[in-house]
Image (cartoon, rainbow, N blue to C red):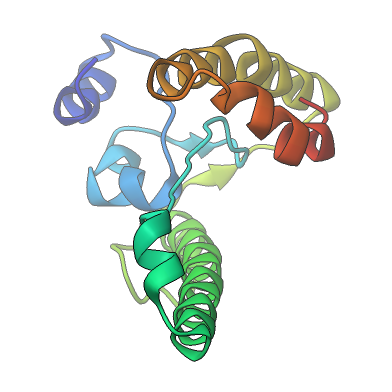
Length: 157
């Protein structure tokens, strides 16, 4: 279902629930038509920065170090901002302060059970990851294998 149709569908009872991040739900007005939030993540997102190897090798070592340091700092800032945005959106959706980036609502937070976490783990392993891997492997045939070796084993995937 297109994101822009979810809020109306929730309000009209066409759908009983929907999955998105708390900031997206807030900006889309989903809490206007819902009562409860289940605070677990379901989706994978991957960002990457690349430099052509010939370009990299043509850079002075101090320039490589400067660029590497800047990318590491940017990555840390993105993680920090993502966590802050998540926490702020959860507060906003629950009507708690401080609510700095969204609109306050009054959602109740449902407790997360072991069964909920198992369902999410299965969805990530059986749906999200295979779809991503197919797309990644289409660009680079060794993509999935390299990701599983570097990251997947740490995540149990």
